[in-house]
Image 1 (cartoon, rainbow, N blue to C red):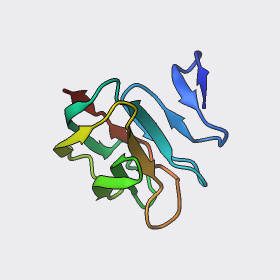
Image 2: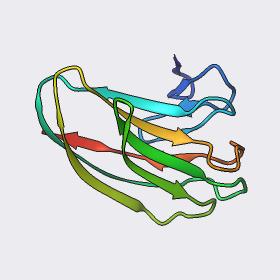
Image 3: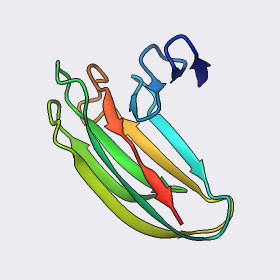
Length: 124
């Protein structure tokens, strides 16, 4: 991804593949992924909410939190579901472990209208 300073967001190689400070939009062939890398070992707590930001259409998204290749939490969010879906989980990490926050275009395979709030906080 490349930072677009005019729009204050990260832009992927696909037109709608974007990430900004608290939300994102998946591409048609790629997920929107925000990655955190553990600076030290310990147990982290991950909290936050996810919800639909564009109820104009589309089939919804699937959001997930992954440690390495392991899904720690996953939730389908239907189009128009503007109710905050909370998450609150803990996991041990070693230095260099990755935590990915993934917005996927969902089961319908269509990324139209898939802008999604996904605003995690990580604390040790």
